[in-house]
Amino acid sequence: MMGMDDERRSNGGPNGSEAWTAETLVQWVYAQQLADRVARWGGGHAMPSGARVMSGIVEDRARLGCRVDGGGHDPGTELHPDADAVHRWMLDRCENIELGLVIQHARHGTRPETYTRRPPRWHPQYDERGRIVVVYADKAKRRPIYCPVYRSPDPDSVDVARATYAAWHAILADLVAELGNGGLKTGQIAGVGAPARPWEQTVLDLRREND
Image (cartoon, rainbow, N blue to C red):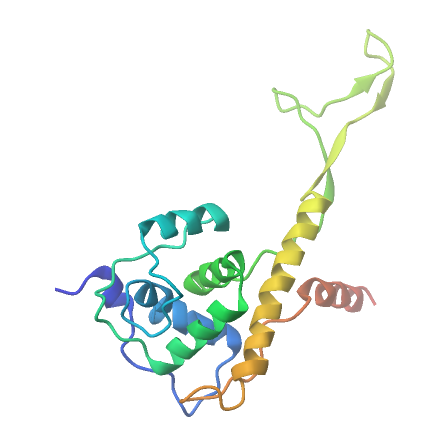
């Protein structure tokens, strides 16, 4: 009987008649081929130096700050050569936390948050009854001074999120540079597939709308 992971894993390789983007390529490698899981249990050729036992998986989760599932593959499962090549490259290129970032988003078909559509805005504070908080100059509350406000999302959080996105994008750009022209047995890599700084493009779009 096939396990859940085996059912999810595609036995086919990439379509040689079509070009990948780096983004869709890593999605295939980690969401369909599940290269990290196969390699971890010895079924592929991309095994990092030293076997990654359960203690290593626990360490991964602690370092990454997210759960990248270790899976339960049959150790005899073989990786497609291109999935193996990409995973080998990732192991050489990435720090542990960077690899986790790529795998997490590849597995879910997402990109790191950039707050592109949710720029920081000022919001009033509310009390426990759902009323806007007002600070008064007198105890009788007849002379309001100001209403406390806060920014959401927090600008520092936005900066961290966008730096994370930039790191993710840089890894995919390096993948294109290293394997994009002849680095795969089947197919080519035609660009990253995601904008480098999407928040800047949004500003330009808003300016055009207001012209």
